[in-house]
Length: 191
Image 1 (cartoon, rainbow, N blue to C red):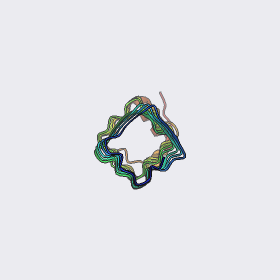
Image 2 (tube, rainbow, N blue to C red):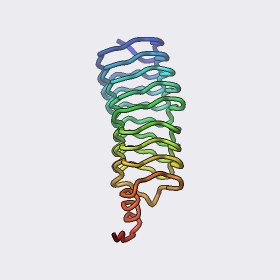
Image 3 (cartoon, rainbow, N blue to C red):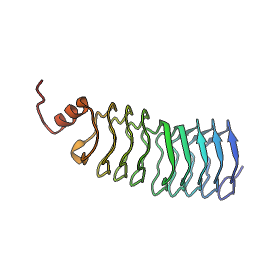
Image 4 (cartoon, rainbow, N blue to C red):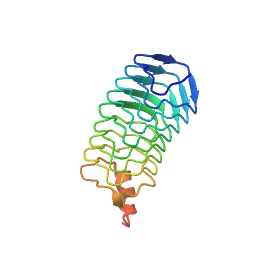
């Protein structure tokens, strides 16, 4: 089936699998996607405005220029996704694994990312102000020039982050994290 530039507004897709498919510039506004699997798919320019996507897997998919405004993205395995110039404003992201995804320059303010896996994700210059990352896995996450004021990192795994490139003003951390961050700057923490 051809998916490029097709209108699937309001479509309901459950338990479907797609591999190496192109959905370039397709319209999936208000779609419901549950328990689906997408591997190496191209969503360049796709419109998923106000779509509900739950309990699905997207592995190594391209999302360049995708419109996800107001979409609900819940409990997804969204690993190694590339979101260059995608529009995630107003999207709700809850639960799941977004490891190794590239979310550079994304506006993700006030999201509840608690308990999620973001291992090796790239948040370069992303707006993460007031986000809740409690108990999330942020191992080796790129936070260079990200806006983090008001973010809550308490209980999160934060090993491997280059803290010298991060503005920690008004960021909430627990005491163990504060020690790890201080050590990354060369401090000798003595009990």
